[in-house]
Length: 599
Image (cartoon, rainbow, N blue to C red; front, side, top):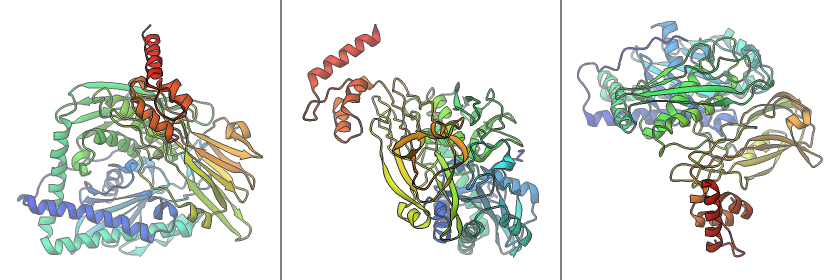
């Protein structure tokens, strides 16, 4: 997409005093937080109300993002693209009560399930900006219930793609477009309920800003917008001083397969740091594919911004002042800037995760003490659908998981935690069992799944669900073959896995059903009583395992994170019968290992 960049941040003349500017900035952030609360309390789907898989933001009239509170990191900075697309499309043709809906990956959308609901905000007839809520609808049509088809070859197969459209015009519902949505999604009542929750959050934002203007005046609040951007810009420029002014390049496997036997696909990243900005160039990246391995520009931008912000200043207020200091370059038609008809649905999961991981490889050459080793890097996104003869209704559910994160220069990786590109919440198993025909049997950490290192990778998790009715499963995930690589001498983590346990036999989908890929498949029919096992891999280690404090290894063994045999084989640490470190045996074993390594 071509986005017209608005003018640089400029104040309107007189600037607001620093004390008032800080009050206004915090009010803007709290307004976005209230948008989040409104969405959670009024949503229909567990994806919104439990998982909180959505992000809210405030924008000025030029399309600059002035505040984003928490939300999903895969949306970080990417909301500016659709808002600017709306401005580009309609100019100043906005009215109070307008509501825009959009999910097109080629014009600023992330993936089709992430539907943007945007509302222009007015004060006494003056356009003051936009409020936006991008959230994951449980179903948006397509060839598989809930989406995430692992075998789509064309974007039309994946989901209903909505161009930027005014769903409400001056407060009046566009009934024709509502009917079009109703005819193209499986669970319209739930989708429409979530859309209304998103609209409610937009209205909340407008009312809060109107109240702020009533107190401080329109000119002062608009100056506060600019002051918020300038604060983040100055702060991030200062943080950038920690990064050397140089150019580095990194390349890695981005997606191991495409579901049809093709792959692997690779991403190349070149980072050039100057005192004024950071340029990230994706020249050399593989061309887009007619398979579910592409990453929309919006998500690729978020996966570029997030690791940089994480290593420089993770607490900087995220807004356009920061985003404009990071220049994103990607050739049209490559994996991270695809064009029609490349499939894009899966981009918020594995492609986005993997772009951020290649970014970590590159950043490790600039700030090695601040990066994190590779992680499980997938949502293991899986959707299910079927028919309940008792209720005489269809059902659909969507599961996405956390796993083991990579270790860092001074800390072990987090276990059973969300990847850097997502910060969703675990959904209630009790709520699921009330709503869907399934039963949870197991949810636990996996021993020995974290990569060994001076600092150990986080442990993966396994979740087992019994199908109480015949259920059709569809999935799109990666790192089911190639494990996350260790950093600076650390050992690799472990791979992800989908399997069906039937009659006591645990087989992957590739083994049981003969599909080409263990992680990408569509519409696989399971039986009543089948057990679905979703296994999340462990994170990679950081640093030489022989340098890990033996007492930390003993603690891991006592707590079941590491087995006694792996303590010896991976760390060279001998644990005695009482669970303590055998110091003499450990020193002998480690000395022998070091001699072998240097021979």
